[in-house]
Structures are given as structure tokens and as C-alpha cells.
Length: 121
Image (cartoon, rainbow, N blue to C red; front, side):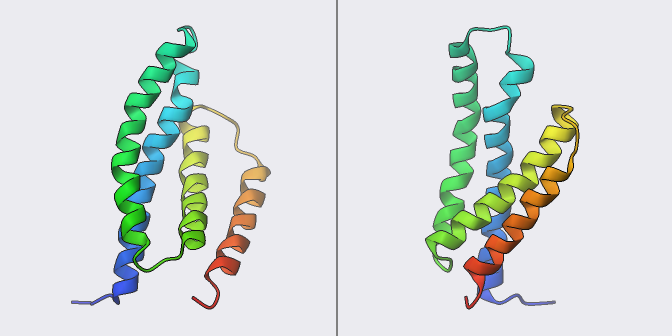
């Protein structure tokens, strides 16, 4: 069986929890635009807060695990990359937004951010 170094395990656990957290976050932030746009804003806010609770139940442990071996800036850049990775499929497939080149350019900017924040780590 392949044994991963401890850093790899921490990074994987952090990334998986942050990805799941981001899924809830994205739904909390944007799904009401599709499903509750005819309701008062405060109903959408209450529903979003209910969904966001699950985001925090995953995000807090993710950041605590990650912070054992990642710096705060590294955690933030990891979060941003995961956010875009979750948001693009959500926007295209769930919200039916058109896919355009701006997603690629934004992703390339984040690749640069990952390079600079993780180099020398």
C-alpha cells in the first residue's frame, strides 16, 4: 500500500473538506437567485443561513487541519482555487450561465497565485 507523507494527507483532508464546504457556500450564496427570487429577501437570507451552517461545519475543521502545516496565506489561496473550481460547474450546469473564456483567465491567475504562495514551501 502506498503511504503518503503527512503533508500530503493534511493537504488532501483540507482540500476535500474545503471543496465540500464550498459546495454548501455556493448554494447558500447563489441558489436563492434561482429558487427564491419571488420571495422576500429575508426568507432567502434565512434559507441561505441554514445552508451556510453546513458550510461552517466543514470549513472550520478544514482550516484547523490545514493550519497545522499550511500558512494562513496558503490556506486562503487554496480556498480561492477551490471556490472557483466549485463555482464554475455550479454556474454553468446548475444556474445555466454560459461558459466563457473569463473562467479560464481567472483560473490561470489563480494558478499564478498558487505558484507564488506555495513556492519554497
